[in-house]
Length: 376
Image (cartoon, rainbow, N blue to C red; front, side, top):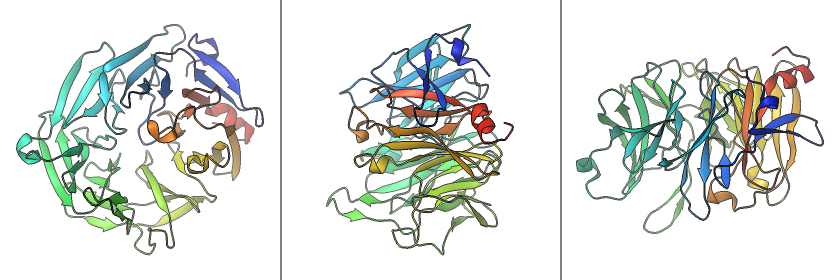
């Protein structure tokens, strides 16, 4: 783990209420710099590189930026050729490259700026219809062979896979209702979650709610199953949302009112872990440590918290006690903190506005563990 106190591109910031220290990227390559969506790590697997979104208002499209976390070899780059749609970027396994989506293709970009087309949805499938999305946020199968795609095309939605080696795209299923946020299991190469979401009819504008948020499928198309059939997710008895996979293959999600859950994807046995209202959440590799934000949906009414939870000791800490509203409209770039653990659990990475700008911040987990009496 690198010492960011020595890094020329980062500055220390302590929360005035909790005293928790974070390190904010203060070397700017863009007016808006934010961490990846919480499902996809911003930090590379070797924890050498921090990848982030870079935006130039009022241009609504973001591009990729990357910075070395090594204080002895500081390096930061803007990659304008890596402009992307949705929150699609994913750091490649080797760390010095990333995948991103644009139009009907998935691309790969390296730190030196070179790019490559990875896969493309064929024009004969699109057939002149409006192509809204190829992937919400990319994920790779556990065997490294496929990228999972969840598309928006014409008046329906679809899920498919892109072969990393050949570039072939295979459509698995089409839907008459909105499915997005698809994510491969990190342990089972065939299994993925394909959540259902609300949508508005593209002609009438009529709003449609969802019936059940969480669905599991497999690439063999032998499974299409509701995870929580006893909970009616459309505002009745549950508010399941913001799902992700733990490193050991548990399906996790957050309920806006109840908190976080983890679930065995084969038995569908679930455990209620962090029992309090939360918005976006994430967990460390062994699911002992958790982080969350609460709540960007109430930012107009009160400041936001970024939180840390020690599951074994049932202790909450504030990483940020009162994050101010963003200086831009929140929806302009989806400016939520989206906290996430780095691959080796060394850091909690999140987007912050404490300096009146949109910045990337990293909080070391070791001091948080020490504060709760746990060895990291």
